[in-house]
Amino acid sequence: MRIQYGALPYRFTPDAALEFLLVTTRRSRRWIIPKGWPIKGLKPAESAAREAFEEAGVIGKVGAQSVGLFAYDKLAEESGVTVTCEVKVFPLLVKRQTETWPEFDQRAVQWVPPSEALSLIKEPELKSLLEAFAARARKRASAVAAKAPRAPSKRAASVKRQRRRRHRRSGST
Image 1 (cartoon, helix red, strand yellow):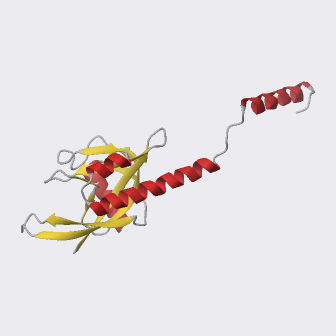
Image 2: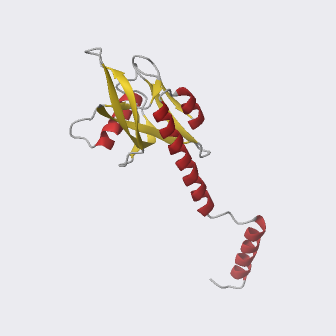
Image 3: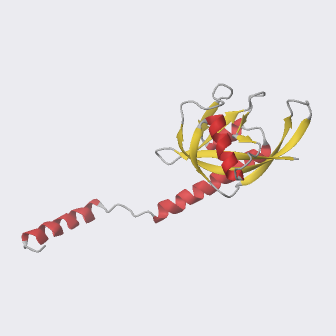
């Protein structure tokens, strides 16, 4: 079994919906996440982030901890032998996507919501990994929303303005 490192590029839309970035493989054109062989001198998460840039032109904040693993069979180009690869996946919160990148002409890329990503991906373990990540992201978003301060009601805001006006008129500073 050979080890590879992959990135799970994700972002949130303006209305806080989660999206994943998928890329196609070069040969079979199936939808996957960016992944590749370890890069000498880089930590696993850094290798994953580099692959995401090379395959999809994305730059962002990569998590140091893996969010899971998936295995797939890869046909080795030079020998024609099939090799099983285990991919260690690191989350990558995408900050920007460049207009071009090293493998721009070799792959298609697509931002999709989790439900569509699950229908496009064929590898069962990768599907499970994305599903679990999306569930954690939803749970985290709900917790953040619950803790967020609520805007005051119109009545409360009006009362507050009236108090400020009275305070200014009375000459207090």
